[in-house]
Image 1 (tube, helix red, strand yellow):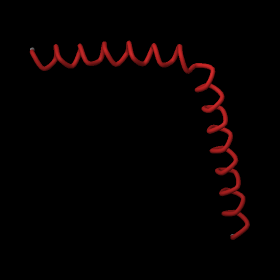
Image 2: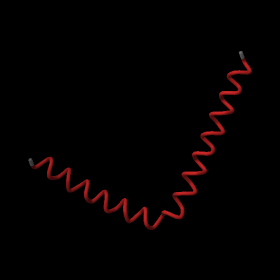
Image 3: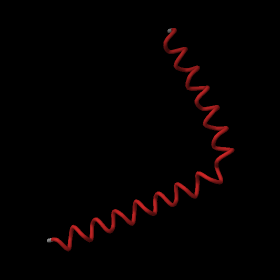
Length: 55
């Protein structure tokens, strides 16, 4: 009982902090996520093409 109560309190605090950070950093985080996603896609496609060319 006590452990679950502590965990729920920690979760509530974490969600509050996350919400505050999201509202403060939303303009910064969204472009960075998009850029990261694009880089990941490019690197994956390059890896796939290099893999095929070796065969």
